[in-house]
Amino acid sequence: MLSEAPQSSLLMAYEYPHYIKYMGSKSKIMDFVINGINQVYAGGTILDLFAGSASLAGALRSQVPVHSNDIQEYSAVLAQAYLTAYKGKNVPTADELVQKAERIAKKHLHLITDDFQYKDIESLQHFNDVEESNRKLIELDFNHDYHLFTKNYAGTWWTALQCIWIDAFREVADEYKGKPVYPVILTSLMYAMAYTSQGTGHYAQYRDAKNIKSMKDIMIYRRRDLTHYFVRKYNDALIDIPATKTNQKHITTSLDFVDCLKSFVGGTVYADPPYCFVHYSRFYHAIETLVKYDYPELQIKGGKLVKGRYREGRHQSPFCIRTKVSKAFRDMFEGVKSTKSNLVLSYSKNGMIDMDTVEALAVEVFGKDYTLDMVSTDYKHMTLGRQGDRHRDVEECLVLAKHK
Image (cartoon, rainbow, N blue to C red; front, side, top):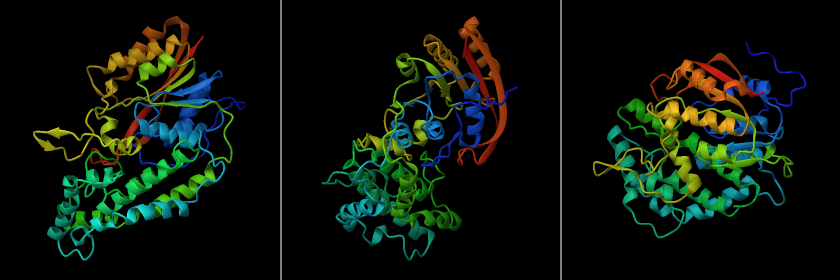
């Protein structure tokens, strides 16, 4: 049984702002996770090996050095917003950022003709005609920079108008690249995108209006003002981030987990690998593209553009592939052991492999050099509409490995 962490423990779960909707986020059980870390933590850096939405970085904040890693680059930006962002001098206000974005957006509003307008909708057919007009912007050649979302995603999760604003804010963000507030601008934009998106919280596939009920629901998001959500989150973030640079030596990387462990000098590793067959790169490709802003080739199947408009060459995690998951666990355990680090592994009893197999692999790899323990708790796991049931009961397990 997991004992209470010592009263003198350095680590506790700080409150932190949430920037995106994220499947499998551990925010609901952060106290449980950090209590597990407290059982093995013996000083040094804490490596969050599969950081995802960087909730652990948010919870730990300035308490200890954190190395936040995930092969998806959006995760590093989220971690930087929690760990290394600060106000500094001449931090822009939300109004200043909106004014700059507005000057850019106004140059391109001529694209929004009556065919693109979500007003005075008379029927389901009328609505879907407007949707299709928005989507046809992908066929247009643009003669200005920062048009990626307007071209690729109009009429999908966002309207053409919302995409013009996304591109405008992204251009404004780059004016502050290298500044301590840069990740906060980007993550506030991620937030605005999440809460104006007509999807269920991820970007695997956008919804089609198949009846009046679904049309009315989609229309709610089509009419949302992206700037409103950006301003709200950015102002909240400015209250949250410190005025000056932190003294902690935080690190953010976007590495494969094996390569990250090779570069880790040792401490405590927190590992929360994906545990189902779906790849997170599919669900969050849109914010990965926002961060990279690299005008990617979009996936084609059968000569047609894939509805989800996914990036070509998305990362495929071995933890999501049944024939590779056992080796992935072995590689991870061996990587931890090679640095003589302690480990806290989060995994589900509903995962790709059973906990008995995970335990057996841990015992085999860590051997007599480590003490091993396993604890569990029950919580509601957010699926964000992936399987129809919005929440499922999941028994989360922590495997604790402490170097002797």
